[in-house]
Length: 291
Image (cartoon, rainbow, N blue to C red; front, side):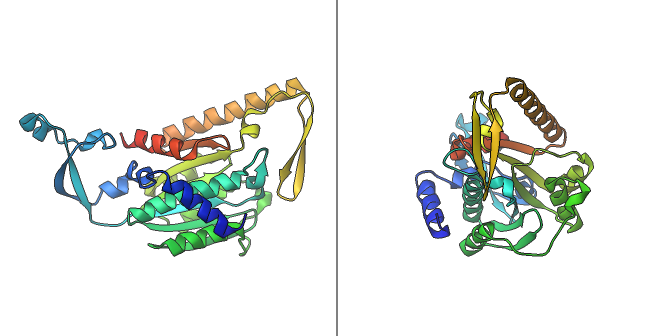
Protein backbone atom coordinates (compact mmCIF):
# COMPACT_ATOMS: atom_id res chain seq x y z
CA UNK A 1 0.00 0.00 0.00
CA UNK A 2 1.45 3.39 -0.95
CA UNK A 3 1.69 6.35 1.44
CA UNK A 4 -1.36 8.21 0.14
CA UNK A 5 -3.53 5.11 0.45
CA UNK A 6 -2.23 4.45 3.97
CA UNK A 7 -3.04 7.99 5.06
CA UNK A 8 -6.51 7.87 3.48
CA UNK A 9 -7.20 4.58 5.27
CA UNK A 10 -6.09 6.07 8.60
CA UNK A 11 -8.16 9.21 8.00
CA UNK A 12 -11.19 7.01 7.44
CA UNK A 13 -10.57 5.13 10.68
CA UNK A 14 -10.09 8.36 12.60
CA UNK A 15 -13.27 9.83 11.14
CA UNK A 16 -15.21 7.05 12.87
CA UNK A 17 -13.99 8.04 16.34
CA UNK A 18 -13.27 11.28 18.15
CA UNK A 19 -9.49 10.98 17.85
CA UNK A 20 -9.12 14.32 19.62
CA UNK A 21 -10.20 12.45 22.73
CA UNK A 22 -7.04 10.34 22.54
CA UNK A 23 -4.88 13.27 23.42
CA UNK A 24 -7.48 15.27 25.28
CA UNK A 25 -7.84 12.36 27.70
CA UNK A 26 -4.21 12.73 28.60
CA UNK A 27 -2.79 16.12 29.58
CA UNK A 28 0.93 16.18 30.25
CA UNK A 29 2.40 17.74 33.36
CA UNK A 30 3.95 20.28 31.03
CA UNK A 31 0.49 21.42 29.98
CA UNK A 32 -0.50 21.93 33.59
CA UNK A 33 2.63 23.87 34.49
CA UNK A 34 1.53 26.91 32.48
CA UNK A 35 -2.24 27.29 32.73
CA UNK A 36 -4.57 29.99 33.96
CA UNK A 37 -8.17 29.56 35.08
CA UNK A 38 -10.66 30.70 32.43
CA UNK A 39 -14.19 29.55 33.39
CA UNK A 40 -16.37 26.79 34.76
CA UNK A 41 -18.13 24.21 32.63
CA UNK A 42 -20.50 21.44 33.60
CA UNK A 43 -18.85 18.09 34.31
CA UNK A 44 -19.15 15.33 31.67
CA UNK A 45 -18.01 11.72 31.86
CA UNK A 46 -14.62 12.23 30.20
CA UNK A 47 -13.52 15.11 32.45
CA UNK A 48 -10.82 14.46 34.99
CA UNK A 49 -11.99 14.16 38.60
CA UNK A 50 -9.11 16.37 39.70
CA UNK A 51 -10.60 19.29 37.76
CA UNK A 52 -13.86 19.29 39.72
CA UNK A 53 -14.46 22.47 41.69
CA UNK A 54 -15.77 21.08 44.97
CA UNK A 55 -16.49 24.51 46.44
CA UNK A 56 -18.89 25.21 43.59
CA UNK A 57 -20.44 21.76 44.09
CA UNK A 58 -21.09 22.53 47.80
CA UNK A 59 -22.93 25.69 46.78
CA UNK A 60 -24.92 24.38 43.81
CA UNK A 61 -25.12 20.57 44.24
CA UNK A 62 -23.93 20.35 40.63
CA UNK A 63 -20.58 19.17 39.31
CA UNK A 64 -18.49 21.74 37.48
CA UNK A 65 -14.91 21.54 36.30
CA UNK A 66 -12.41 24.34 35.94
CA UNK A 67 -11.50 25.19 32.37
CA UNK A 68 -8.01 26.53 31.77
CA UNK A 69 -6.24 28.49 29.09
CA UNK A 70 -2.74 27.34 28.23
CA UNK A 71 0.05 29.88 28.38
CA UNK A 72 2.50 27.86 26.33
CA UNK A 73 2.40 25.14 23.73
CA UNK A 74 3.46 21.57 24.33
CA UNK A 75 6.25 20.03 22.27
CA UNK A 76 5.40 16.44 21.39
CA UNK A 77 8.34 14.33 20.23
CA UNK A 78 7.78 10.95 18.57
CA UNK A 79 10.77 8.57 18.73
CA UNK A 80 9.93 6.04 16.02
CA UNK A 81 11.62 2.68 15.53
CA UNK A 82 12.25 1.99 11.86
CA UNK A 83 14.57 -1.01 12.26
CA UNK A 84 14.15 -4.25 10.30
CA UNK A 85 12.50 -6.03 13.20
CA UNK A 86 9.47 -3.73 12.82
CA UNK A 87 8.77 -5.35 9.43
CA UNK A 88 8.02 -8.72 11.02
CA UNK A 89 4.51 -10.02 10.42
CA UNK A 90 2.58 -13.23 11.07
CA UNK A 91 -0.89 -11.99 10.09
CA UNK A 92 -2.19 -9.11 7.96
CA UNK A 93 -0.19 -6.31 9.59
CA UNK A 94 3.47 -5.72 10.30
CA UNK A 95 4.57 -4.09 13.54
CA UNK A 96 5.53 -1.09 11.43
CA UNK A 97 1.91 -0.80 10.21
CA UNK A 98 0.78 -0.62 13.85
CA UNK A 99 3.49 1.94 14.63
CA UNK A 100 2.33 4.15 11.75
CA UNK A 101 -1.27 3.89 12.89
CA UNK A 102 -0.43 4.81 16.49
CA UNK A 103 1.85 7.65 15.42
CA UNK A 104 -0.66 9.16 13.01
CA UNK A 105 -3.51 8.96 15.53
CA UNK A 106 -1.55 10.62 18.33
CA UNK A 107 0.14 13.16 16.04
CA UNK A 108 -3.19 14.31 14.58
CA UNK A 109 -4.64 14.48 18.08
CA UNK A 110 -1.72 16.66 19.18
CA UNK A 111 -2.20 18.84 16.10
CA UNK A 112 -5.86 19.36 17.02
CA UNK A 113 -4.67 20.40 20.48
CA UNK A 114 -2.50 23.06 18.83
CA UNK A 115 0.74 21.40 19.96
CA UNK A 116 4.10 21.23 18.20
CA UNK A 117 4.82 17.83 16.65
CA UNK A 118 8.29 16.62 15.73
CA UNK A 119 10.06 13.28 15.38
CA UNK A 120 13.21 11.26 15.69
CA UNK A 121 13.22 8.27 13.32
CA UNK A 122 15.92 5.64 13.74
CA UNK A 123 16.97 2.37 12.14
CA UNK A 124 20.06 0.16 12.55
CA UNK A 125 22.48 2.72 11.11
CA UNK A 126 20.66 6.01 10.68
CA UNK A 127 18.89 8.72 12.60
CA UNK A 128 16.72 11.50 11.25
CA UNK A 129 15.27 14.49 13.13
CA UNK A 130 12.23 16.29 11.75
CA UNK A 131 11.87 19.68 13.46
CA UNK A 132 8.62 20.62 15.20
CA UNK A 133 5.86 22.49 13.42
CA UNK A 134 2.13 23.02 13.90
CA UNK A 135 0.98 21.65 10.58
CA UNK A 136 -0.48 18.55 8.99
CA UNK A 137 2.23 18.80 6.36
CA UNK A 138 4.85 18.11 9.01
CA UNK A 139 2.97 15.01 10.13
CA UNK A 140 2.79 13.82 6.51
CA UNK A 141 6.54 14.49 6.18
CA UNK A 142 7.26 12.32 9.22
CA UNK A 143 5.00 9.60 7.83
CA UNK A 144 6.91 9.68 4.54
CA UNK A 145 10.25 9.54 6.33
CA UNK A 146 9.12 6.32 8.00
CA UNK A 147 9.06 4.75 4.55
CA UNK A 148 12.66 5.68 3.78
CA UNK A 149 15.37 7.03 6.09
CA UNK A 150 18.76 8.03 4.69
CA UNK A 151 21.30 9.76 6.88
CA UNK A 152 24.68 9.24 8.52
CA UNK A 153 25.56 6.34 10.79
CA UNK A 154 24.67 7.25 14.37
CA UNK A 155 25.79 4.44 16.64
CA UNK A 156 28.28 1.62 16.79
CA UNK A 157 26.26 -1.60 16.85
CA UNK A 158 29.33 -3.51 18.08
CA UNK A 159 29.10 -1.93 21.55
CA UNK A 160 26.13 -4.18 22.41
CA UNK A 161 24.03 -1.27 23.66
CA UNK A 162 20.38 -1.74 22.71
CA UNK A 163 18.74 0.56 20.19
CA UNK A 164 16.55 2.17 22.88
CA UNK A 165 19.54 2.87 25.12
CA UNK A 166 21.23 4.49 22.13
CA UNK A 167 18.08 6.49 21.48
CA UNK A 168 17.97 7.71 25.08
CA UNK A 169 21.65 8.66 24.83
CA UNK A 170 20.87 10.74 21.76
CA UNK A 171 18.03 12.54 23.52
CA UNK A 172 20.26 13.28 26.49
CA UNK A 173 23.21 14.47 24.36
CA UNK A 174 20.91 16.77 22.38
CA UNK A 175 19.66 18.25 25.66
CA UNK A 176 15.99 17.52 24.88
CA UNK A 177 13.87 19.15 27.62
CA UNK A 178 10.23 19.89 28.44
CA UNK A 179 8.85 17.51 25.84
CA UNK A 180 6.18 14.86 25.97
CA UNK A 181 8.06 11.98 24.31
CA UNK A 182 6.30 8.99 22.80
CA UNK A 183 8.71 6.10 22.18
CA UNK A 184 7.25 3.59 19.71
CA UNK A 185 9.30 0.41 19.41
CA UNK A 186 9.37 -3.36 19.74
CA UNK A 187 12.50 -3.20 21.92
CA UNK A 188 12.14 -4.81 25.35
CA UNK A 189 15.77 -4.41 26.46
CA UNK A 190 16.65 -1.51 28.76
CA UNK A 191 19.52 -2.34 31.08
CA UNK A 192 20.86 1.17 31.64
CA UNK A 193 18.41 2.62 34.14
CA UNK A 194 20.60 5.68 34.64
CA UNK A 195 20.11 7.06 31.13
CA UNK A 196 16.35 6.47 31.42
CA UNK A 197 16.29 8.59 34.59
CA UNK A 198 18.33 11.37 32.99
CA UNK A 199 15.92 11.71 30.07
CA UNK A 200 12.79 11.33 32.22
CA UNK A 201 14.03 14.01 34.64
CA UNK A 202 13.68 16.68 31.93
CA UNK A 203 10.71 15.24 30.01
CA UNK A 204 7.64 13.09 30.30
CA UNK A 205 7.94 9.67 28.66
CA UNK A 206 5.30 7.35 27.26
CA UNK A 207 6.83 4.04 26.14
CA UNK A 208 4.66 2.15 23.66
CA UNK A 209 5.76 -1.43 23.01
CA UNK A 210 4.51 -2.77 19.67
CA UNK A 211 4.63 -6.53 19.26
CA UNK A 212 3.41 -9.11 16.82
CA UNK A 213 0.83 -11.26 18.58
CA UNK A 214 2.65 -14.41 17.49
CA UNK A 215 6.03 -13.42 18.94
CA UNK A 216 4.31 -12.36 22.15
CA UNK A 217 2.34 -15.58 22.68
CA UNK A 218 4.24 -18.18 20.58
CA UNK A 219 1.67 -21.02 20.39
CA UNK A 220 2.33 -24.78 20.33
CA UNK A 221 1.49 -25.76 16.74
CA UNK A 222 3.72 -28.83 16.39
CA UNK A 223 5.21 -27.90 13.02
CA UNK A 224 7.73 -25.59 11.40
CA UNK A 225 6.64 -22.14 10.26
CA UNK A 226 8.28 -19.40 8.21
CA UNK A 227 7.68 -15.68 8.72
CA UNK A 228 8.62 -12.59 6.77
CA UNK A 229 11.23 -10.19 8.17
CA UNK A 230 11.47 -7.58 5.44
CA UNK A 231 13.02 -9.37 2.49
CA UNK A 232 14.24 -12.23 4.68
CA UNK A 233 12.40 -15.13 6.28
CA UNK A 234 12.53 -16.55 9.78
CA UNK A 235 12.03 -20.29 10.27
CA UNK A 236 10.68 -21.47 13.63
CA UNK A 237 10.29 -25.00 14.96
CA UNK A 238 7.06 -25.01 16.96
CA UNK A 239 7.23 -28.70 17.83
CA UNK A 240 9.76 -28.28 20.65
CA UNK A 241 7.54 -27.69 23.67
CA UNK A 242 10.46 -27.27 26.07
CA UNK A 243 11.94 -24.39 24.07
CA UNK A 244 8.53 -22.79 23.69
CA UNK A 245 8.02 -22.86 27.45
CA UNK A 246 11.48 -21.35 27.95
CA UNK A 247 10.64 -18.63 25.46
CA UNK A 248 7.38 -17.80 27.23
CA UNK A 249 9.14 -17.75 30.58
CA UNK A 250 11.81 -15.38 29.26
CA UNK A 251 9.38 -12.99 27.59
CA UNK A 252 7.17 -12.88 30.70
CA UNK A 253 10.25 -12.07 32.75
CA UNK A 254 11.17 -9.27 30.32
CA UNK A 255 7.76 -7.63 30.59
CA UNK A 256 7.67 -8.01 34.35
CA UNK A 257 11.06 -6.29 34.49
CA UNK A 258 9.93 -3.52 32.11
CA UNK A 259 6.74 -2.89 34.08
CA UNK A 260 8.70 -2.59 37.30
CA UNK A 261 11.39 -0.41 35.70
CA UNK A 262 8.86 2.02 34.24
CA UNK A 263 6.72 2.07 37.37
CA UNK A 264 9.74 2.90 39.52
CA UNK A 265 10.86 5.67 37.15
CA UNK A 266 7.34 7.03 36.54
CA UNK A 267 7.40 6.28 32.81
CA UNK A 268 3.99 5.52 31.31
CA UNK A 269 3.96 2.11 29.59
CA UNK A 270 1.58 0.75 26.97
CA UNK A 271 1.85 -2.67 25.36
CA UNK A 272 0.12 -3.20 22.01
CA UNK A 273 0.03 -6.25 19.76
CA UNK A 274 -1.12 -6.75 16.19
CA UNK A 275 -4.42 -8.04 17.63
CA UNK A 276 -5.03 -4.94 19.77
CA UNK A 277 -7.91 -2.55 19.27
CA UNK A 278 -5.50 0.37 18.87
CA UNK A 279 -7.87 3.32 19.35
CA UNK A 280 -9.77 1.75 22.23
CA UNK A 281 -6.60 0.71 24.08
CA UNK A 282 -4.99 4.14 23.71
CA UNK A 283 -8.10 6.01 24.78
CA UNK A 284 -8.71 3.86 27.86
CA UNK A 285 -5.07 4.01 28.88
CA UNK A 286 -4.76 7.79 28.61
CA UNK A 287 -8.05 8.27 30.40
CA UNK A 288 -6.76 6.03 33.17
CA UNK A 289 -3.57 8.12 33.43
CA UNK A 290 -5.52 11.39 33.47
CA UNK A 291 -7.52 10.23 36.48
